[in-house]
Length: 111
Length: 115
Image 1: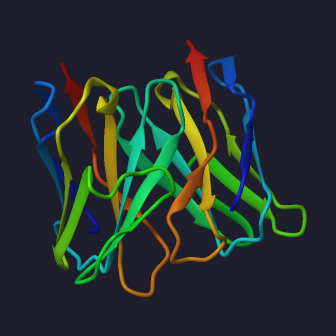
Image 2: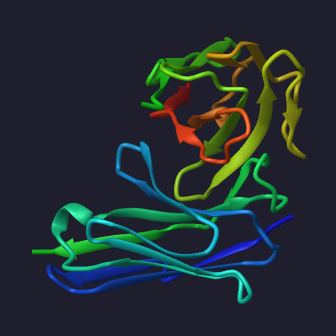
């Protein structure tokens, strides 16, 4: 069963700062998911990646399969980026599996 | 595309009653649906995996007789919390996956409060 560690748990930053959230997992995986959860609970899938790097707008996700580590970066952060960011991996490593989630990073961007 | 809906979004019920939560894939066929729950200030946890036309697979510690899952069609899975108790109060969220694909599309969640 995969274990997921995320850091930091809480992060407060000023608008415009570059944000990095880290995720480590214990078992080899087919792909890693980055999710965003807003206060109402709804979840948005930001990225699913299995190697290298993906970029969507101001969000960048990277993964190092050998080191079992991924990072989520936010450039030019904005108060609307305030949310909980969650890293998730297939619980058994395979693509057909349900997900195991990190505890999330509670991000607050202050104006 | 790839929209998943959940109904209801919020439900309050009395202890001992049963509550049914629906998860629908609106514009795709979901061969697999997953049910997760999240207690306050905790991570999401997988409860069960539901494949269309077959019995759900439950995670350790999740009572299959208490949390009844039905995935009768490629667009609908239901979770019924039977004889709900206050400790079942939680945020329940489903996700759906297309055949052969790994991406999971999440529903908006259902907040259950059992009094």
